[in-house]
Length: 237
Length: 269
Ligand SMILES: Nc1ncnc2c1ncn2[C@@H]1O[C@H](COP(=O)(O)OP(=O)(O)O)[C@@H](O)[C@H]1O
Ligand SMILES: [Mg+2]
Image (tube, rainbow over all chains, first blue to last red; front, side):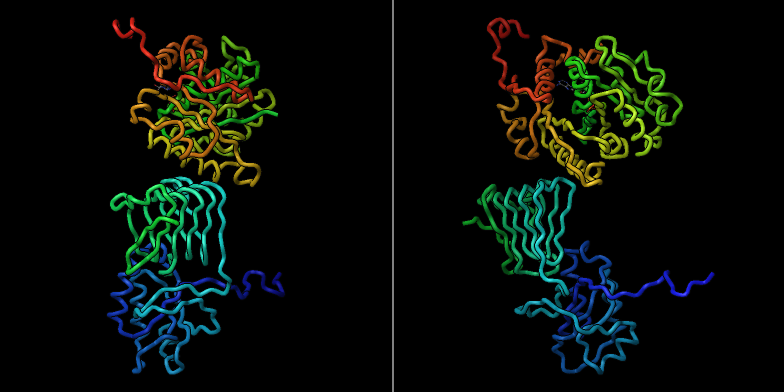
């Protein structure tokens, strides 16, 4: 018996949160160098991640781009480019030829103030979320707060890993690894009531405390933030 | 209502089997019908420590595979009639363990026993997961050293992720910390983690501290769980621990370095 309506396939609209690459140039060599640099520090987060190429901040006046080459370049750093966003109309045929989808009506939460040639930021149709954890995060466990901040009310033990796209607030000792702003937010910060971390990372820049311990703030309330690509750890208050 | 209690740690050689044997014996001494199951397939030694290795005919795997009934496999202790042992298999491999099989055995044991103690193998592999899967409570055995505490921390995470209670989303496993092989003089000299250090790191309730003692090995070799050695520090510490588990208010003992008397100092120990 053949069925009247197919139940094997269904097409539905869904909202996904995807990393977005903002291109400010079509200089493929420059893009490549910078991507390699940025991704080498956060490889695992972006490995095989689908990405959208945002051309809204393009600075070049001479608009021409080999999308096939661009696509290959992104593939080389283990990203899966799926489409272009804010793409100038004259480039649409090129994009389609390279099998990149033309995306419309995205809601971007990008911030201003960066002048690098390409950055990775988060685009989302959801509002910023806060994830709250009230149990100890133990060795071998990993907690990730996509899209927002992570608040932890109990200790993060050695060997545990806490990760957020935004800030991380730990109202207890931090003895494990904390990675804030993993989608590239350089303004993200990490706060804890007792700084005993193994590793602190912000926007891909990291500091291993075994090698480089912040002696003065050790076991004190502290915050970590990024300044000139360096992680600064200071006591609070 | 019977209770399933796993004795676990992550790390090997920290005293899980020693603790399982003494804890089960202690509960039986207090009059509770207790069975202790050896989950350490291939490395069985609970029956040795309990002094019943010669009476093993059938084992846990035989029961799971329905080659023997529980009545055939469970051994009754000679000294305490409430105490029973379900030995591990010496020859089979862990593949015999399935959630269904282990679950059936534990359910059947619940009909006859008030406490079911599961002696976990080391590691975080199948055998250890099976031992903790059905647990209502857990005894975390830790030695006062960083690596052992780290492993216990990891095991606590696994209890929260992989146990039946966690998967069913019901009230989580109740966790108790046991610090074993504690040497007060070495804590005083800073070579060993203190009780406070360990509690700060793990953040769970302390059920007992068992001092390092030669009697443990001697008792094991004799096939007598150390809790039955009334003179020994560690035996007494295990009795206190069982009392605390049953809700009694018993202060910790044996936390200070022993003052060596003049005679001992002159003639050694
Ligand atoms: N409190 C203690 N004092 C001295 N030796 C101990 C103590 N607890 C355990 N041991 C010894 O440590 C070894 C490992 O103990 P066991 O209970 O078999 O550990 P596990 O089951 O965790 O592998 C045994 O030789 C045992 O006699
Ligand atoms: Mg053992």
